[in-house]
Length: 174
Image 1 (cartoon, rainbow, N blue to C red):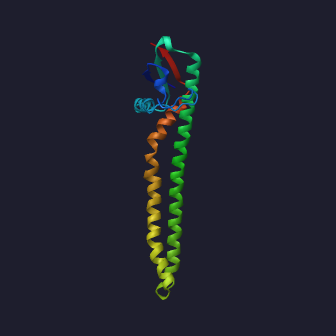
Image 2 (cartoon, rainbow, N blue to C red):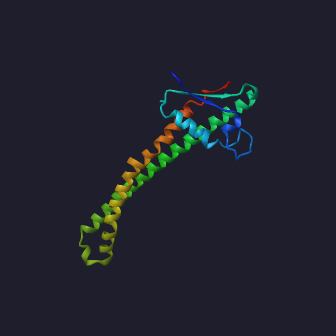
């Protein structure tokens, strides 16, 4: 498997993390700019493997901090990959449930219409209520499955790429 390199040059390790988070590197939130830069650089890379190469000044390098940062990056990518995967599953499951409820509503409306709903006010109301509800649920459920779930794909693919490549994070000196 060939790896494709993403190379970033930093002034110091703090460039990886949020300026507003003062916790140790093992717990700090990643900088939005840092993650966005990796995301942008990974757009033209496929899933065959990414090597993240981070260059820092030689006089500021620390192997213990680099090890902690690698673990933090791997943890971040794993967590967000899981969150995006869960979000996509939840969206698809919501769509399936909506379609199921739409079909049930149609069956109920059909059952009510098999009699003469004009004789009963409640039956007339249920038909008027169930028919549009069933169509809405069917179409909205299909939209959730076919379109909304796909909107999650770019984020999911980014975190999948980075999660599967988390062992390929290296630090270099400049």
